[in-house]
Length: 323
Image (cartoon, rainbow, N blue to C red; front, top):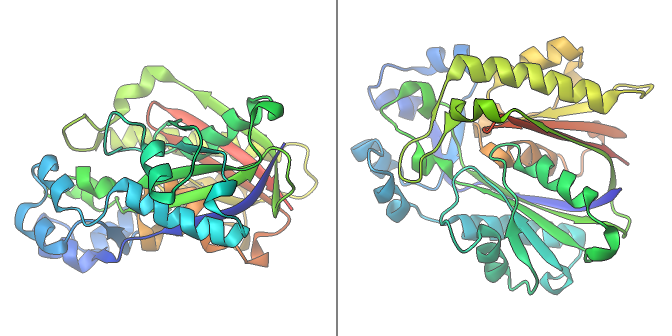
């Protein structure tokens, strides 16, 4: 069993609202976007003037234009998590990172975040794209506790607007930027217990969602939507098995319509379904943990929370949190 001590999030200040996307003259408007994905706004590390003038045709230019790196946004989230946990950077004995679009192949992104926070300890990447957060929990829980430090930081630094083609209305309406950092312990009790973790995958579907080393995000949208609804439903049912009362639900923040379909299938009442995709967009691996972070002090989450996420490589993972 793992113990959750704190979680933090960071959204860059630049906001892409639906009116801005409509101004790009790419055949979209507020009504079209809301009907299909239910998203009003999203954050970005890219200057809006850069997006307007280039539509981000060259992702290499986006790396230079970005106002912050993954390491910087991940460290901002890490500082919030440390403050909430009442811990210092020197208390953290390991850093894991995972996301959809890392800044570099090497060094590991976890090293870059640890460097920003002045954390001295092993740092490595454990990544399964959008499902990275719960996959990291699964692997940490599966390790021998005596081999682990008292406190571990899991970071999901997501600035994937840098790989979005703003001439493609089907993808640019989805993505936003956000980073999260989570502090867990294998032995020191915290605010939540992580009593169950879950991980499965279907590698044959790996080509359905892709970000090339130098290129734009692409996906087979209709197939991925069906996969996300089916597997998220499976996750919620597996994490809820045997419980007298159904837990609250946080799913992968891919789009609001997908989440609504899962909530209907699983009969999750509105007051138990927590999301922020309508205001933040799809922020990859940091989506579900950012919802938990934004509701960190809210008693509305209840005593049990099922978090289920799906990602490219067609991996799905989840965790059950209990107070």
